[in-house]
Amino acid sequence: MASIAMDRLGSILALFDRHGAAIFRRCRALLPTDDAAHDAVQDVFLKALDKRDEFRGDAAPLTWLYGIATLHCLQQLRNVGRHREKLAALAAEATRFEDASVEDRLALAALLADAPTIVQQIVVLRIVDEMSADEVAAAVGLSRKTVTKKLQRFLSSARGRITTLVMEREVLT
Image (cartoon, rainbow, N blue to C red):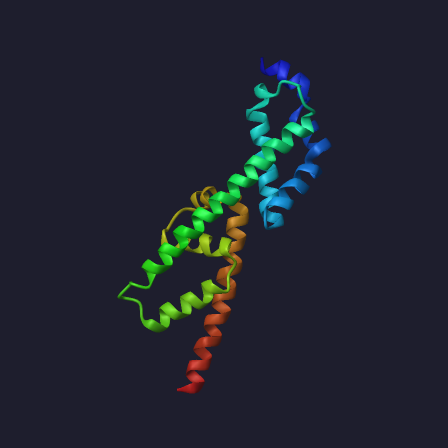
């Protein structure tokens, strides 16, 4: 059965070569960043490979791929909303940590407040919840490489800002 469906579709690589750009445009139209769209395209073609038996040939392969892409991207957006709710709950809980000084909590809040929502999620999941990079990637719907890069950029920026804050404190005291 799989070979019949694959014959109708052609190879996944051929589909990607033929329709990858159109699927990227579709994903990018629905998702907020290029990184998220690139990750979504990979997921769409993996889903197409898994669901190739479901392709009946009633529609063009591009139409079928568009359907998979649209559903996938809408699910990603729904998941981001759920993650925002969890992040807000974690942020509210973090303010109750008694062992952190007020200055430390304010500094952390300031660092996170300036970061995009996806970076906030990554930081909380990786540092606070101590999830592995693979677990974080699965939770936020990005590749492990993208998660690692975003976390590294955030930490680099945070180190620079903390150094500046420490220097300003020393000058003022």
